[in-house]
Amino acid sequence: MTDSSILHRLADTIEARKTTDSSNSYVVKLLTSGQDKILKKIAEEAAETIMASKDENTAHVVYEMADLWFHCLVLLAHHGLKPEDVLRELERREGISGIEEKLSRKTGQ
Image (cartoon, rainbow, N blue to C red; front, side):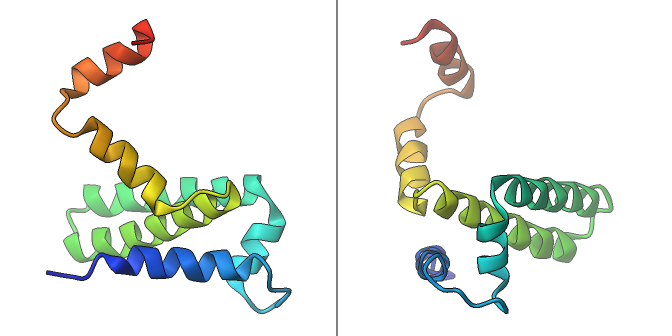
């Protein structure tokens, strides 16, 4: 099994880049370009993931999904959030029907 702590290490690296003024850092360029640039990259990577899936190219799906997750981690850092915040939400939802969970959002439960 692959070590899932890579998400935490990557998130820590992204967080550290927030205080770096390195113009040769992709993460710094994304973070200083603002939320719209980050969101555009997420949309682009999501579309590329979809296309890889439609092509039924599993290796390409993995490659594009890695890009998508990376950019999602950058967005979390932009908002001062960490992977643990998302993981806690997934744990909260564990064992709850997706239909039930969506209904609870509508009724405010």
